[in-house]
Image 1 (cartoon, rainbow, N blue to C red):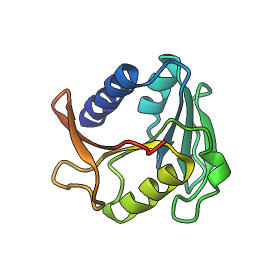
Image 2: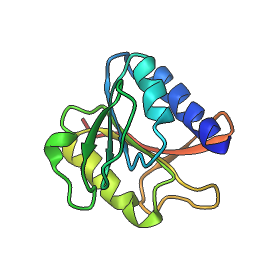
Image 3: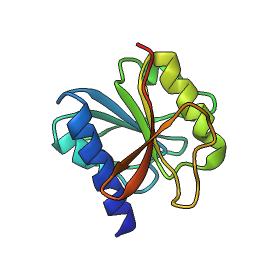
Amino acid sequence: MERRENGAAIVGFVRDEYEEGARIIEVGVGARDGTARALAEAGFDVTATDRRGIDVHPSVEFVRDDVRSPDLNVYEGASLIYSLRPPYEIHADIDDVARAVGADTLLMPLADEGVSVDGFELVNRRGRALFLRRSDG
């Protein structure tokens, strides 16, 4: 239930802040693709990545990639790169990838964690804490 509510917070934020059709990438999708699928159903061009091979809904493109040693071509053209509950130690890696391709970074860490990188603004959406860094571009 909590993951669905977390996903709804991100979907609401993306729908309010980005144009339909924008390229959105979820890092570390794991076994749950509900947020990526909801964004695809809302009209966004969604790619999900994970370091392991994962089956995702056909509306979501999947690319196997490790954000710690990324293939930046996977992320080119993205407006937003986000992650739900990413491990604390990869926050900077996700942000580095987003900054390298000129995308915004959105992190939703565990409820008791902040973000391990400076420069993020706290955005409250549906009672959930989202941490956003807008790209310079």
